[in-house]
Length: 127
Image 1 (spheres, rainbow, N blue to C red):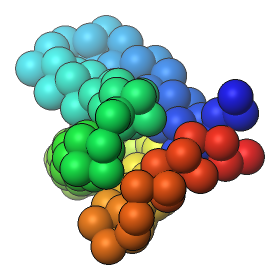
Image 2: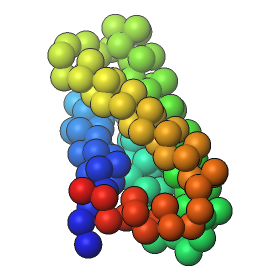
Image 3: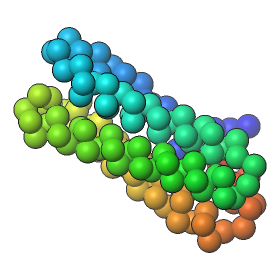
């Protein structure tokens, strides 16, 4: 089965968050690193669970959680940038990536809440 785009992008985002959090820990920003690591990796985990969901309701619920986690990750990234703890193109790119995930997940949740169960199968096989 081909991976969905949101699955691929959330996994790539999690990898970048892990790398960024390692840098934060080197700067002794343990609490902030922990918060960002938790929500930044949770996005993909919830997408994975959603894709294994048995019903439209379960799928939408997990994608909704993934959307909320993406919003939280976006919050922590903005906070780190605005506090002057992080900066540079790589962090701005990660922030843009989180905004893309938010848009994608929000769209999926809105579409799924009004679509028949066949949409779950279509998203699972999307290239």
